[in-house]
Image (cartoon, rainbow, N blue to C red; front, side):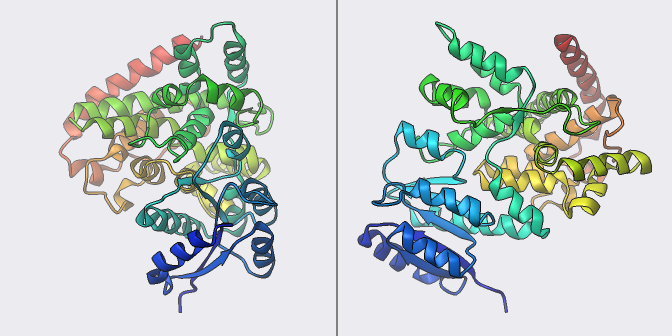
Amino acid sequence: MIKRKRILFVDDQSNVLLALKRLLHGSLSEWELTFTNSAAEALDRLAQYEYDVVVSDMKMPGMSGIELLKIVRSQHPRAARIILSGQFDQAEIEQSVELVHRYLSKPCDIETLKSTIVEACALRDRITDASLQQLIPTVSSLPSLPGLLADLIRELHSEEPSMSRIAELMASDVGMTTQLLHLVNSSFFGLPRQIENPKQAVSYLGLNIIRPLALSAGVFSQFDVASVRGFDITQFTHHSLCVSRIAEQVLRDLRADAASIGHACCAGIVHDVGHLVFAAFRAAEFQRALDQAEDSQRPLRLVEREVFGADHAEVGAQLLGLWGLPTPIVDAVRWHHNPSSSENSGKLLPLTGVHIADNLVNQLTNGPHVCTEELDTNYVDQFGIRVQIPAWQELARVVIERRTQDAA
């Protein structure tokens, strides 16, 4: 018998809880639902049972939703944390951005709420290693390139900050891009569509949101260059940006729609974000995986599965999915090494561009930990695009050379 997922709802308004009970009644066969009207009562329930998801209002008397979720993150790290609230202000955004996985605004369409909970539960089930199940929900920020954060702060402190310069800086960093997309795709801002481009995200958020986040909230941090021997975050970023540029062009050449092209561009930037998670939060184990991969001359992701119980693609996709990034981006991250295993492997997707681009960049890049896996020809051949690969190889050479010159 499959164990039902436990979902805890917290709201001081009885009418809201009654409405949720009524609307979610049909989910009782899948979920065990608990409704509480205070944070104190919620903590009592959490002390008795392990919950998979906690859905809380923001503004409550006594203990607020933010204060509650701080405790949940500390004492119950495996639970997904969702805010369902009717009011958000600037201070609450700053306080909660490191705590909350997903933000939903009242009134919330019940199907949106249900799908958000289903996704959170499904993501957790995909990772079987207990330590990773506990780690991933606690990740609130990802480290950035040394010096880049300082450049961003200088620009934000200038008398007339340039939004184009701020966008350029943030779009050139994997950690900042991931955090931007997490925030801008929340319901805080009520945007009519998902945003997949980091420069668009900067434009939508604006200086009044970005400045306090960068300067005081601790959302962005600098990577400790000495934390993992052999993991060069500058080289990592160079690889990610090259993959992004090539994946975008592959989708353009294949006449994909604008949304898919944007998703491919963004997925290319964040496709290896799982490596950042390992390097920042599991440095000793990641060091062991890097050393073993080099010694055995095996692809790093295979060694990661032995060391962590999951590879960087799985971990990256779990984090991005939990943070609410668009599904095509999450899928491209999850399957970029083995696209034939994707449920949508027969469709031309951002995954197609990222898989091809990642393979081409790896072929042309020297380094001890470059993935040596081959292009998934069975996947590529179903689209009849093998003939275009030589042109993309030449594009990859040009992109890598230009980025190398720009960095010099």
